[in-house]
Length: 481
View 1: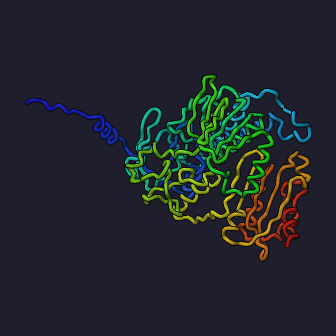
View 2: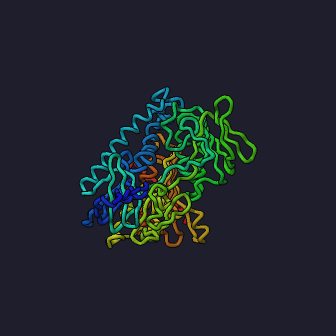
View 3: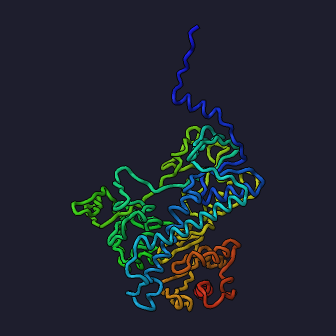
């Protein structure tokens, strides 16, 4: 009898290999260990659930630690220190701590902080009994993932899955990125040196943060933004103050301008061609327009999910996707895409999954924008109140009036409080200047508890502090009634 020869296709071999794997079962699998994934996993673990997080070994802590929030904010502090920027009001505009600042000088501080923060995340996951699976996850079905690690693969199954895989800078095919002259925002440390001139395409949060940091170093920065306004969700007076301070440092704004092509000229300089016919030349260019969700790496079609534009996922108020057992949180679901809000979204998603109490008011989310000077806000803006036909009055405190500002050398800051003239209820708080993202939380607390301007009038604040700005602004506002 003639033997039968079996012919295995690649797909059949793969199916057979998977079939021999014994699935590891969990109550919750989290894809991504950034702020949303980390806090979502910990919340579920504290509810007594068996939890696994899947992420690449070099990305533990997510983009927040390895490419976005932590590196860029550490870079900001390094620049402020090495340039002597904070002390120039005392020692003159030519004061510097170090004459020639290199990429290596800046990277050294960033590397230290990133390594420490990565260790903190690993320790938190370990202390909460969460399994950290190193590798790339792909869906096999709505409850099953294959995790391809550096050496071997695992099959994981769970009743619920939380997608918190984050985003990466958008890399359009027509932009000739080379990581040296033409870079994305997460490639700053790949440059050979700090450029003398830089074009930044994109006037969002990331573009403005890098623009303000680099002009503080003396780099000639031209920022190109297709829209006619910057940060339309931020109070217009605060944005104008930021533009004023950046212009004084030498920043050039090209608003309402669309880039049609980016190329290199014969001298090795970057040229940004604009729709208006202008040609902007510089030593380097940073492209900071939009971000792509990492969902394209997950084989989403096997789960039944269909991503939206740029891979973003739609969720309901419970952070539940169109597939009932799959939830999503963090940057992958879009605006506001802040580390702080992502943490809370991850925690709330786990609470919703396992029936724990959970509530978050989107109206009271604080925003911190780490430009130089720093911006922070919570609550309504003048525009949103005007559009809603809600009457308001404004109380203002200028940093130049505060002893603390004189002590640290910041004469440019301002805090403004929006409040209802009849009820005196606080409606919004907006700050620009040193420690803005810290002191905004005082206003957030008063907003949360429905407080009025009387609180700021009657409360004793430590002296000298930036928090004292609330007292000054409170009195200023009430004096207008």
